[in-house]
Amino acid sequence: MEDSHAQRFYKTMLISPALEILKYTNLEGGPASTISLSGENPIESKVLAALLGTPFGELFAGSRSPTGIEAGMWLYYSQLERSHAVSQQLLTSEGSFWHGIMHRREPDPSNAAYWFRRVGKHPIYPALAEEAGKILGERWGIGWDPYRFIDFCEEARLQPGSQIEKQAIAIQLAEWQLLMQYCIEPS
Image (cartoon, rainbow, N blue to C red):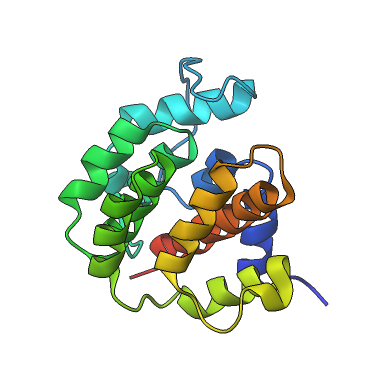
């Protein structure tokens, strides 16, 4: 049985988010500089250079949240100030969600909690709870609780290299992928 679009998206996001996102854009192929934010892959660097030079509204026309995609991309590449500037201007639950993630990463847990309160009950929470359950087993419990996850990340931050840190990173990656997928889906 062939993977669904969502499954293919999820799998490839583990490899290279910029390359996968490019598949969803209206960007025509063409020359791009070799600016690199991640320093990992020259093709990815060209994609990021193209992303830097084109408004996200044009790149992701028809997506649910082009500005949310932009906030998430900057966040993925640890461009916290850029992500913050974009998410702060996005007055939706997705903007608040990206904003909360960014503050959790700083770390600024109380500010992260403020932004997660503004998210409300987001449509990706059930899938995110399922992913957390796969990673943590019974330890996570039922449902998604962003405040509990802030505390979990704080605990992990104090234990570098530990199993809990690895689990927190895995859940954060799943969170990023699910929210990015939600933003990319057609409006």
